[in-house]
Image (cartoon, rainbow, N blue to C red):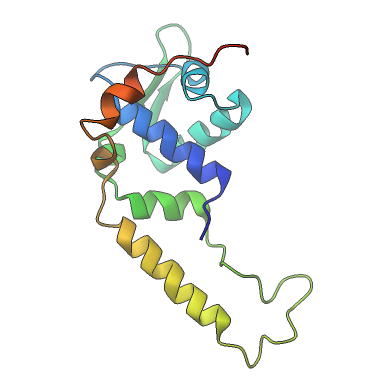
Length: 147
């Protein structure tokens, strides 16, 4: 299973925030630059993370992003599901339905595998992602040169 770019960016943003010092509020542009992400995509991801209650945002001077308590304690499985949406691994019933869909077991087997994938992530919290090895790296990232 491959995660969408949107989910990938969302996970990178929360990892960066959870590794940061308490009280720090980097801006969306700062995070986008440090993680070498598109500012436009980062803005959309941050908006969704805010809707989910994972990050708190404050606009204007002295504003920025901070990870919430939910953001620290949420399971990686929950957040990944929330960012990915309810899409199935294969599309059997779309605009051009698969002619094999009535006698095929592939859809149910892939759904079982997808559920197992998410279940494996349910045991990991967002805070678990900022390991002692990863935390310092996340905090010392510099914007790429040549941009």
